[in-house]
Image 1 (cartoon, helix red, strand yellow):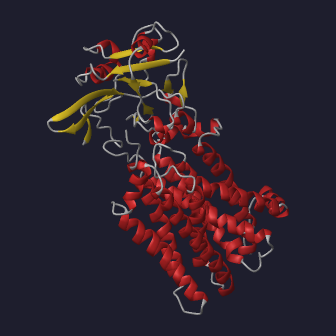
Image 2 (image 1 turned 90 degrees about the vertical axis):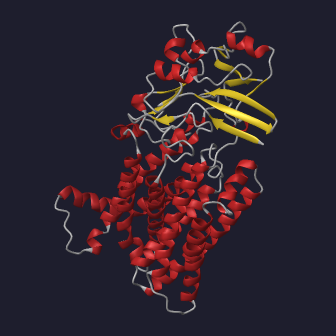
Image 3 (image 1 turned 60 degrees about the horizontal axis):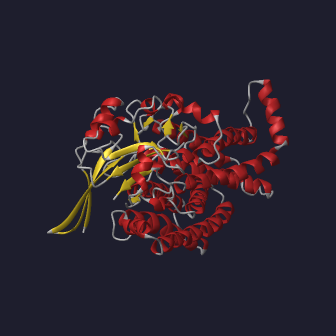
Length: 177
Length: 313
């Protein structure tokens, strides 16, 4: 089993509904966020090209945060979801420093927090909150090993890219072009 | 033109717009770790080579600083933790892929060992010293009997301690400035040089200081060579390495690095040390003070600058 997410950059309008849904679903403290929207503008006026990307933890196959965690609080759960056990975390910040995507933050309660792919929902067979709430249906979630999953179907006949592949982290967020 | 904006508001404290989660606590600890490593290494080295009588400050007196520096460094690390009361979690597991884990274990072993080393010399340094409890006296006899083994262990661990201060940073491939394998040797040489400086400052023996000064000149020149090497690596590197390089050439760390670290912290003191060996009279405190200042500054610059550099995507 390998959970992954595909983000259709052609459909994303940057409304940030996924950001708010995540904050509500996961009780993210005020002023913090586990996912965010990046707006890319390329070209020279008047021929400009704009693209939105909904970004979050990449749940890397080769996760540097898990490698450098001194206590084992950062770990890879079943399905490849990278998680932090709050009670094992000492808040040293090594994982925050190690993430090329800056996807982790120090929770005001002292532990490191990040996107969990809403594992509490996924375990029940539901989608992550951001996926369910997206008004343009640009987020696709599922198991890559299952050819009938939403994400496998989305990736099948589209070209895609991942973020900072040169970091060697094997990220599992796929951005559809 | 390419422009990238985060429009949903990712104003995470300590992360946005540039990462600055690790601050003075880490820099101070890296400095004290290297300093303690240097002092312990040379104490053990001169004991093993049988120069205990010739180098009394190095082998005995200066080792007062080591446990003190480690203790202050540990408090600084503890202060940096955001889940302070959970620090013991570090010692419930050994994780070889995490430099911080084996660094914590090294500290756990070298700290008591440095106290044992110092304790075994207390009666020699202070003839009136009394351990009060009999078991401590017995323990002292055992330590003195096995001092050579303790010295070997200290020599080995002090190298790990000093190298670790560099590897802690170089293990993060997300920060291109740090992610170079030369950082380990560089921090080792720099840490040992600050250790030598501290011993030189304490020593009143002309002969001992000359020996230390000769070694220190070698270490500082090696450090300068490694710094040149580091920047040559950046110059020949990829876009992210070049970005790191430009922080030091015309960027915001140009003055703090080249003037304070390289010129005042390395070139100037090494020149003074060479002049002193040639017979010029140089104030005893000046070269060590500059070296210690340069060492501390170096760690501040590296920790701050490293967090600015990142992967471009």
